[in-house]
Length: 329
Image 1 (cartoon, rainbow, N blue to C red):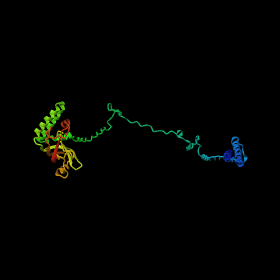
Image 2: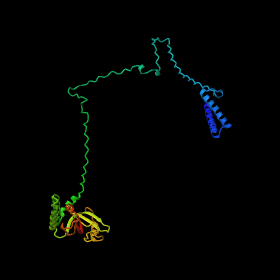
Image 3: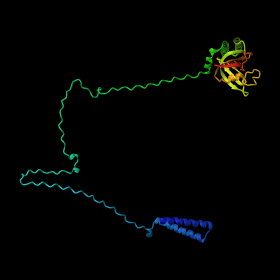
Image 4: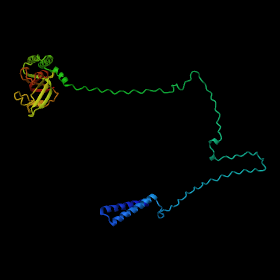
């Protein structure tokens, strides 16, 4: 360990001297430091390599104490044998039996004990009845019958809730409540829609004229009373006027304008604050209603259509309407 420390110290002194020589130039102090570092470094390296013995740094080894020998365990003294009984001269001398001293109880095991005689077995008379013997392996008379576990009772199935009716089903349910006039109107429109789908391009204009004639024959006056349908659209414009559209049982729409500019002359929008607006305020989309009002007579559909093209007017019929009253069904 001393040589390692000398080697490290010499290395440090040498580095300090070399650095001083590099930085400050050759001077006496720097040269001495470098020389001293070389000497200490060489001494430490030599000590590490050759490991010379320095008596001044030897540590005297102390003798280790010898382990103490275990003391012998003391053996118990053997018990003295009983003295033989003295025989008086007047009594006859019996024959001497060889005396066997019993072994100490602690020295005996089960193999050295005297055998114990078992009593002789008693004979028990038995009577065998032929034909009544039973096989203990197959006899089930002594085994109680196993009661089968009751099967769990299935829980009653919850009846599935019927799906809500679709819009088409709601409209179809209103068909029996139509007035004669409304029924004739919806039939004319539905038949014309079917015929239009089957007709060619050249014949479709004539289908529209035929439908207009049937509508005018079914509804002789533009004012109607007690027609039925469901609320299809319910909204308000920026001025607070109500926009309303009602679907008839066949799907045909009767509706107001959806903006005040188009409604300047027709006055179909329902003004806020009127009794009609209060009645409409109680309705919601999908409600079934009975209503009254008036169409607008116009060519070529008998009543004014809100559709711009012939195809839309025939396949998606929609008529402009001014509502007058409502009754929720």
